[in-house]
Image (cartoon, one colour):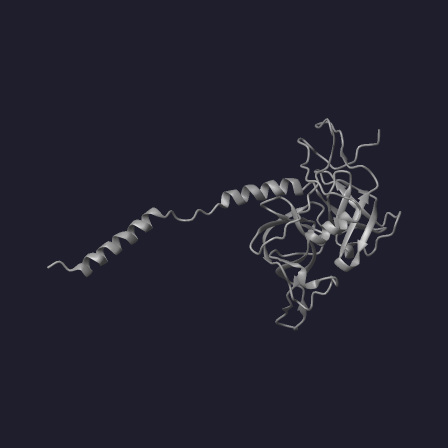
Length: 286
């Protein structure tokens, strides 16, 4: 007699084998992520600007701004501008050349939104590429970034562009949206809505405040860094607490940036830098 149970088992096994063969394994698109990161980095490198605090002895980077229009509107964190004085050279934007040279440009604060730790500013000079021996120059302005109207999801790949540790050249960091809300009671810099801040999985340092959080999928700004979340590190010898990055930064969501821009009829524009650029110095007015 034929054992029907045996036949059924054989059929089930063959069916499972066929399914294993037919279903392709998932493809990890690491190369695409690298390509997108390089694309975002190229544009962000020429859309972010260091904010300098100037003294009689030196200049130091205190934060990051990023252009939202080609004609000089930019956004930063409000607390970066705590020493700002109108019509003063105490705080300036650092416009830099690839050679490492740079110059300070004055700017006006359009609105300082302390409740959301955001500020909208505008440069007092047009920002254009200068003519040089190796570059005929360009009448096109610098790069600028578009601010997203979409809510990000946890796990989204992002890049952060800014000037950590006093650097005069932008650093690009890769990370993810770790969470779309935070309930940390110790991170109270944004009174308007502390729990609505984004948690970003990237280590931050002094100078990253005001840095844009950029989606790799859309190249849009989805948030603005306002605070690094420190983790206490204790010395084994003296028990002295030291500052150490926890690998998490907090960012104001883009919807608050959109509200700030709308109040002043400013529309953010995504614009790539012109090809063949060599510097950030403004051309003289014609």
